[in-house]
Length: 464
Ligand SMILES: [Zn+2]
Image (cartoon, rainbow, N blue to C red; front, side, top):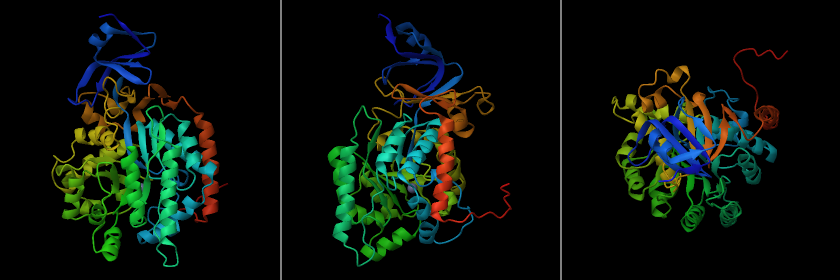
């Protein structure tokens, strides 16, 4: 067989492929041509058949598929991170109106662009090559523009609502506006193989979407091969509301109106009963767990969360970071730890399963399992080189266990998306990071000022 010339050859790396046999090469090589992987396997085999003018010595790297952050707020939270103290204790609705919405509403289009850039940079630098947005609060065009500068693969969309809670509001008009927004964004930002950033129907969820909006979102997703993402039941107040309104629990109601399925991702799902769990399994609906926000937000997942039971029933579990820490590797570590303790059973969510949630599970939910989530011939060249010349990686004895339990985003040396090295030697190759940090600092201070939320600190903070 003649030697094939490829664009890039990474040789001598340890490679966790996540392919159907879950092969791990301890002396492997990866060949890239254009945006795709053309060969992957043991180094000797690949070097025999492929050559390149651009050969990277991979001996210091563990290569994994690019991780997928399946639920992240890239606007609203990144510019105001941790400003609101963690010990503010009030009902969820009060928290939303007093501490969350004023920050979200204070963003200009430029703020949302900078916010999306910062979030994308943080995700890439901790190994996420793809993400599903929770939903842009207002300015989708600015967000798409911002995300596109970083070279990350993103599914974005306006966080759509459309329910009239006040009897004086026109329900039909609200639903129509929400549906028009969904139709408009998926048309303007279509999902195509050669486009990294595109729009999906993203709903706020909870009780904020009318049945008409849910049904329209599902019809759009079915028609165009897209995926719906929405929040549901982080607290007991969602089930309480649905029971009061429809006499059914949320998942029962959504099933009844026909909007569940394998192209639907529900985030949180902390408070469900056995029947709802059965429905999720029967319909193939995906569930996204965001461990740190769940703990910080006191969802009660350690007492009520039934994610191990969901996984056992065959429900596809994915991981997100929501509005907090954007290192998706922390989510994997937390999910692997939490339920061992709650169930007093070390067999729950071992490291290998946590890694599946970050990769193949998420790719399947996105309908992209033949393109991303695993490193295979013909797949997109979306992967991460983890630097093992670091204390948390040495000695390297058990690669997957160490990836989940010892390593995190700190060791992400380089990241490739669609065959392009977007992070190299720990930094973006696409933008000036220092310039972005300066913009983010100014924007964050302005957003907080406009929000009117007071600065609260139990300790004196001396400015000058
Ligand atoms: Zn969220």
